[in-house]
Length: 207
Image 1 (cartoon, rainbow, N blue to C red):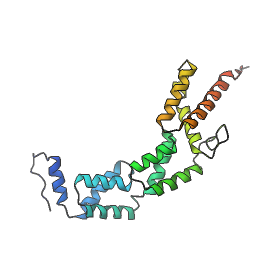
Image 2: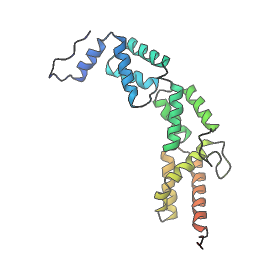
Image 3: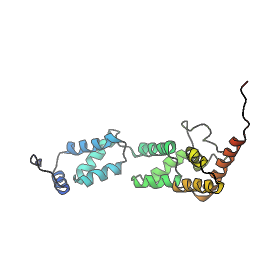
């Protein structure tokens, strides 16, 4: 068992890695993985990279990953679904952007495709009106995601006086989140039409 550093000695990064590389107790690596999962859910690959970079031996890392998977603490399918649901709720993004993010998290391409296919089918958590967009293209989730993103930026966009500048800003918001040009143009047209309709709605007098 590797010795802990003497009191008052500040370990260097290399020393920490060397000490962890000498560890042969599976429970130590398992506990390190569990602590890493306390902050938020992670993919299998994220945990593997974290433990490997920390210096733990590869065979102990794989044993820890297998055990955590058995316990249900690691599940790439659940992680991918949670990631997409979180993005759709807080910061809608295009399918292309979501696919790229899942790849960076180490999610298998086939699994990512499966989860994104589920997203296209919609579900009980969809917000009212999200399943079908104003132009009836509810089958493409990028349409409703683009609409939601523009609604989240509605106040900022409303403060832009010039119609051309407002359109450019809206396009920039969508493009930064991975939406293709056609989706951008259609979403902006729907957004501006809805804003214009709201502006032209007659006021209701209280009697």
